[in-house]
Picture (cartoon, rainbow, N blue to C red):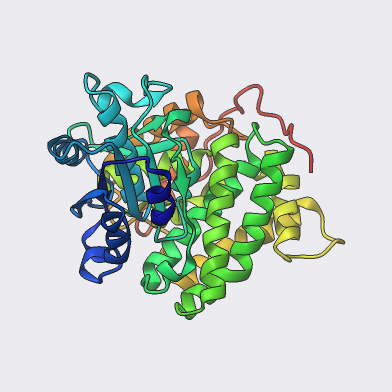
Length: 386
């Protein structure tokens, strides 16, 4: 990709954004060498942290401006690529703050050209119109959603993921699975997103455990890179749901890594949603080779959810959030409901006490509480076909 950028003559000066690991291991240097040999000035910024904050992004924007960069290259996982999107957007919108650009369709002037090279298989951020930034003052994660946030080019190379630690492989892989599953059961699902989500689930179920157990398996790594990419395309068009809405709050309040938070939340949300999307979940199970054709849709859907729990257990991902406090539950439930209600076409919406009940299931040593007797929100009948 770097050679292609040089050949096109698009840039005079670029900002190369990463975390410290690619710089320390030398992963970034061959790319820098190609760009500099082609006459492009390269400034490396390697201080991106997980869940990038507004303050961190603004500090990176200062580096961008000081070096008069006219393009941005991101090498890293979802946090790095999300940070790069926000930086590139600020570079093109100097009079708008990051907070001004959170929400939907608020990146008015687009962004500087961005090139994404993912080093983890999870977020699919290299093909999405989204970036997530952390507001430390408000203790919340805020999405930026705009087609202008799509990178100009992306490079998928499984060899860049060979050194990813097991716990990161597991968390990011479950993140990709969440994207595919929530896109498939969304009310906005359509034929083209179904194709993407089904293929992503099939690849993840066939390759994630191999990548986890044998991180040097290039075939599994490349398959997971493709799965993440496909899932990213699927949820960019169909959206996600309550898993993300709740997980965002666990990340903002307790700094639970996003993929790990999704993995913890997903079985609980799917248990609740199953009555409205059993046929869709059963189809995912069939694609993953789970169950058989004599089973009812409900039975097969339950097996699919059980498989997710089994994967979490194998990967060492708990069924609870250690830092979750009883007094935080109303706040988390309220924020999750607001995010889903106005942003996501979930198969089954939650009322207040039901949302609190679901979040309470993720308390350490969670008490066994009955589901609140609340009527379903009107208009959440199962509408997607199997």
